[in-house]
Amino acid sequence: MKKLNITKALLAGLATVVCTYSCKKNQPPRQQQLIDVIQTNLVADTAGYNAAKIDTDLVNAWGLAANPNGIIWAVSNHKGLSTIYNQTGQALREPALIPSIDAHQPGSPTGIVFNGGTSFGSNKFIFAGEDGIITAWIMNDSAKKVADRSQFAAVYKGLAMAKDGNADFLYAANFKGKKIDVFDSNFQYLTTKPFTDPNLPDGFGPFNIQNIGGMLYVSYAKLKGPDNEDDDAAPGNGYINIFKPDGTLVKRFASQGTLNSPWGITQAPAGFAGDGATILVGNFGDGRVNIFDMSGKYKGQLQSNGHTLGIEGLWALDFLKTNASVNDPLYFTAGPKEETHGLFGFLKISK
Image (cartoon, rainbow, N blue to C red; front, side):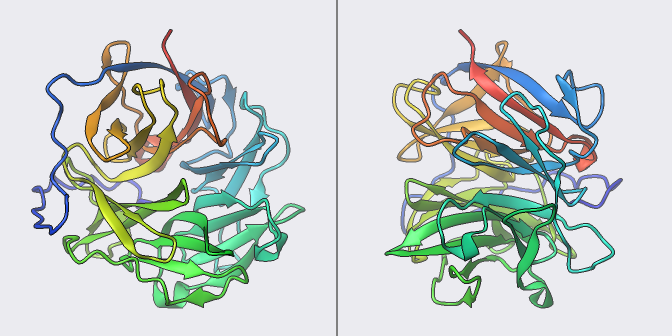
């Protein structure tokens, strides 16, 4: 949650990194892979975004999750809510309230995951917040606080769930703390999974974490001083690592280049952004969507009407289903105008 009415910092210089494994800057390919998409805005908090529906509860739309029936839960960071829609953006019920550490203030949720199992108290939707708490919803109108790391100044920007062996765990991107906080299926905090990268430059923190094929992709953004609670967006300010669920580093996936405070990460099916499956990485910093092959080779950026696509304040990118096909919509959320507005919609390949 950026402090409103504060001018963004001047572009920072690109960080230099020396690695013992592959971590070269993303170099544009000789012939950029041009993938043209059509953007459809389903819901906005106000007029002016050409959205099909207006929902004033959707402000700084952040994380996205869906249940197996396709019911979509979108995080409304500045309202302390999660709004619930069908796949056309129609509100299906009153928003769920996300509590804060202060009973008199709304929460500040960011990441969200759907839980279809019996772990985590059978709570269906679980949220991470910038106030350093984890909340969970199972029924009625409000989520409940289930873990609290606020006393340790945690600032959670993203959340993932994964299995390590036969056990389920939650992984919260603690941006200010520059680490991944891990919780077991009873929401107990653990310190046994390291998630360290000795070659990550100082001044970067985990901005988001996403489970893709059982591996955890962690994006990093540059911390903005002096409080280190928000990102310092600029071209090249970003890294992505892949970890096993036990916290072991697998590889550096992407470094600097076109990354700019990367947050949204998703796997696209073959045919959506290339002949094979690809990893799409959305930049919060400039709203662009980077395309990588599964090895981490940079392939270009999504286009719209022949120009590089840019969605101001871009957060989530998610097909919201396993085994997505090339014709499925790629849903997105955004917090345009310095996170003072909200946007929810989807992208589809231009035919």
